Amino acid sequence: MNLSTYYAASFFTFVSAIGAMAGLASFWRKAKTPVPNVTKFFGSQIGGKSVINYGYTDLPWRLMAFDIYYFFFFLWALPYVLLPMKPADSDDLDELSFTRGNLFCIVIHFILCILQLGFIVALPALVLLPVWIAVLGVALFFLVNHGICMLINGKGVEYHSDPQYAPASPEHAHEQWIFINGVAAGSHWMQNNLNRLALTFKRPILGIHNKTAGIIFDVVECLIQRNWGYATTDVRVCYRIIKEKLYNPQYSKVIFILHSQGAIEGSLILDWLLQELPQDLLAKLEVYTFGNAANHFNNPHRHIHSQDVALNNPVAGSLDSTNIAPGSAPIIRQPSPNGSGTPAEQDAAASETNQPTPSTFSLLRAETSSLSPSKVSDRAIGHIEHYAHTTDFVALWGVLHFTTSALGSQSLPRFIGRVFARTSARGGHQFCQHYLDGMFPLERDPDDPKKFLGCVEENNEFMESEIVVGAVGGEMATVKEAMEVSWLGRGTVEVGDVAIHGGSPVEERGRFRRRDVAKVKVKDLSRLWQYRNGKSPDEIPPSLTRHGDGVVRTATL
Image (cartoon, rainbow, N blue to C red):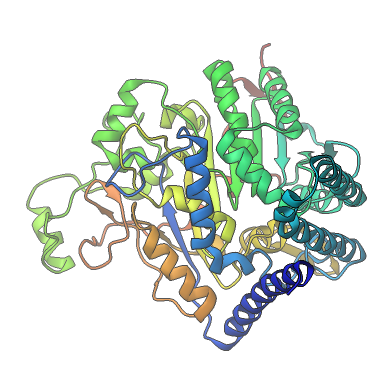
C-alpha cells in the first residue's frame, strides 16, 4: 500500500466511524421511548470529596493531556453537537433549518472539514520533505483555509441585532447586553444568534464575533485558549468594551451571554476584569452561559467571613446565599447520619428536636430575585448561571465535567455559578435550535404564524420542570444517565423534590424527604428567565431612580 492510499483509507475510516455513530444515535433516538424532562441543579462549588485533582492553574501540558483524554471519554456524545436536527422551532433563525444561508455555511464547513482532516493526516509526511518545502506547504494551506473562511466570516468583529426584533427603548437604556458566539459560527449564524436573543429578551444585543477557522481548527483553538490562556483578538476587543460599559455611569447592568467556545473567552475576560476593576463595578455584571466549554469560572467572595459561612454551611454557600442577615436565612435541618427510617419517621424524629421548620424555597430564591445579587452572595460579580444539556458533548467536556466533580483540594480553583443541567430528547449543542428553542421557546402570532411575538410565557416545559439537586461528585452517574438517554433512548431519572442532605445539595429521594420541602421549578431559580419579553427582576438598580414617566434613569453621576 502506497502512502497516498494509506492516508485515503485512514481518512475514509475516520469519516465512516463518525457517520456510523450519528446514524446509530439517530436510529436509537427514534426507536426508543422518550425520556422524562429532567433538570438537575448544581450550586456554586464550595469543596467536597476527592474526585478531581487538577485545575486551570496547572501545567499546560498536563491540562492538554486531561483534555485529550476526556475528549475521547465523551466521544459518544459527539454526534449531539448536531443532533437532533429537527424540530427547527425558530424557523430561519435556527442553525439547521433549511435555508439558503444555512446551507451555504454547512457546505463551506464540510469543505473545511475535508481539507483540515486531510492536512492533519498528511502532517507526518512533512518530515520526508525539505524544510523549506514543508514550511511553504503549510503556509499555503493556511492561506487557502483563511480565504475559504472569509466567505462566511465577514469583515467586522462587532455586530448588532436587527432593530426589527428589539428596538432600543428608554426602559432598558441602563442595560447593555453583550454576546460571544461559539465554535463554527460565521457572520450569518452570528446575526441569527443576536436576533434570536433580541426577540427573546426584547433588548438590543451587541455581538462580539468569535470568527471561525473551520470546526477542527476551532477545536484546536479551544484547547489553546483553555490550557494556555491565549487571548484572541475578539477576547481583547470584548474585554475593552465590557470594561468601558462597566465604568460608564449610564449602565447599571451589563448582561454577558456566552455560548460554547465563547464561554472559554468569557472566562478569560472575567479573569482580567477581576484583576483590574473595583468590586462595586463588577457587581453590575451578570453572566449567563450555554453549552459552556470553559475549564474554570472565577467569582471570589468579597470577604473571608462569607467564605467561612460557605464552608460551614455548604447549603447557603452552594446557593450563593452566604450574606443573608442573621435570622432571615432559614435553618436547614440535617437528616440522621444513617438516613434510616421512612420519610414520615424521619419527620417525626426531626420535629422532636424543636428546631425551626426550614424554608428551603426562600433560601433558593434569596439570591435569584435579590435587588443586588452580589450583596446576597457576597461575591465580586453580580450573578452567574450556566445552562447545559447532559447529552451535549461540549458541555460534558466543559462545565458539567468541572461542576459535577468534587474537588481533591480546597486550594483547587472553583467553577463558580449555578448550573441547570437538562436531560431531554432535545438536548444538543446548537445555540438557537437546541438551547434557546428548548429552554426559551418562542410564541407565534396567532394571526400570522410566520411571525413571533416573543418568548413563551406559559407551558414552558423547561421552566416548569421541577429541580432535582445534583450530587457533587456525581459525574459518572450523570454521564451514565446521559448515555442511556442519548444512545439507548431511556433513562431512570424521575422528576423529584429538592432535598438537602449532609450540608450540601444532593439528589436524595428515599433517605431524606420532608413534607415541607418546597417543590422548586427552574423558573424559580433562573434569573435569566426574569428578563424574558422585556421584563426585569422586580428591582430598581441602586444607582437609578424611577421618574414620574415610569422610566428608570441615572440618579447621579
